[in-house]
Length: 276
Image (cartoon, rainbow, N blue to C red; front, side):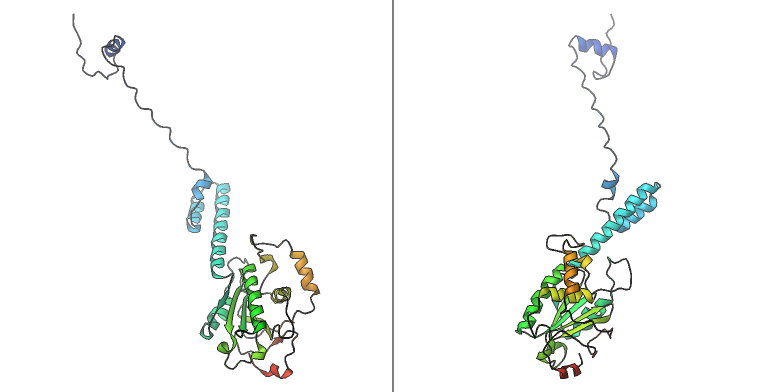
């Protein structure tokens, strides 16, 4: 009788099967299963977290027009989010500036288009206040501007001590508001709140009619940017407010223009000869 040697006890042969059946060889170990390959990532997973440039390249490589449109829509959304974050980090507060900063922080800043505006050439709204330390109307105005700066983060708000901006600037003209858009003065108001206490709604209305802020961009606390729930009421208040100072004609985009606009103040007429 010929006995076949066991060359490989793990080999899948009929002889080894007989030996396993009789317990001479241990049961053969099952071969490890090949893991099921993971499913390909979804489109949402593919584009999530990519930069706008990466998304643009991905859209160019895509053959399917529907997928290309989805990628392009997501790219625009990412751009808007990045721009909003950038604007929010820059604005939303009243920024103190010095005389040497005025041109850069005010006039030139107002020429820069808001990246969220589709229409170009509109520039950015800039509100600057010349104030006097410890002066009650100045203190009140600065407090109201801080609230509005958070409410309108797409508008830049700045402050500067009056006689540090213009030498010997009269106390009686402070606080002075100068509103800029696209490098030009949109409105200029002297002695704000000197004659009586000014309500926040009056100040907001002035900024709206001067077009340095937009009610469409108003942000209420806890809300996302967009139309305010109280927009209609606010607009009615603005239309009926008789205390809104009139708007100036356009003038040069730097201090020195004599096209002043007054609020309803008790400032004497000879103040109008002072060039701001």
